[in-house]
Length: 420
Image (cartoon, rainbow, N blue to C red; front, side):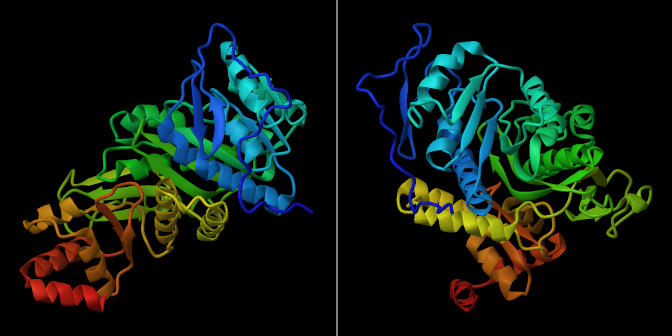
């Protein structure tokens, strides 16, 4: 039986005393991430992506614990740091590390030898990602965990990845097209993800819902559906990532896959089902052009709280929540767990927008959350935007509460915080 170690092992040492060096065409750039040493060489590498890698490693380790096996396909591996960490920390039985650039081969192999110098648990390939995924499907070589770290809004790999992952396996998908998710290229998002996306104040959350919705559409074609275990936005890039579990059976199209509206006049958002197409309007007015609509998009939960709780517990066992960088992952996972509350609707509200509509200075975010909780509303921080909240409180009520808070004395504000 497999037992998950309480803490990942420290970087592996070589069986001989010689240091592995990349080819002459690549200069050596030694790096360390979570105690795992590797060489970035001349490959594209971002330190800022370490959090996304942390989340992936935790997810893969949890899968290994529950299924007692873990075969990983890293379709666009770069220098191979993610592949190395799947071997060293997640306990992967086998990793296929692929990068279309053959010049990266020496760097990738050198890094993976740090985890397995005998080369029994990994192999390096240099194929275009779609070709590799399709070949795996045709050869019936299915993987438990497929990681596709792509750039732009390139979504052509989604169907091939769905075909190559095992049922109930995990698929880690990516988009870096913040320009399209911001509503600036609706024709592009329509072609890539089947969603016509227009500008809304919470465009970065739309980027995640666009990505998940596109994956759901592709899964449906194959007779499958996907369940988001977590969704993660990072400002650098920007990068939109979603960890999806692929399951058998088509998803009911009327549930959690519909249209999102935002009213410029009152600031409220609302979901519209397919049956309501042609009947979209906001209850506040009938002013033409006040309602902005995007879709179809994923409108269900962005995260699964039980899975995130397992990730948080494992991060604690591994000692990842003890240091400064660990506090970041702990805080992130806790906010994501709060965001998983099924009562919370899609979208987030920036505190500055509420204050602007109320024509007062922005209140402290913690004070606004305390006020909303005291009024009986669900409310939490957003992991996507620092100065924003997710709440089921309508915008008009948020404005009223902020006005009342602004008119309170300092003692009343302090007393309100204590009571909350």
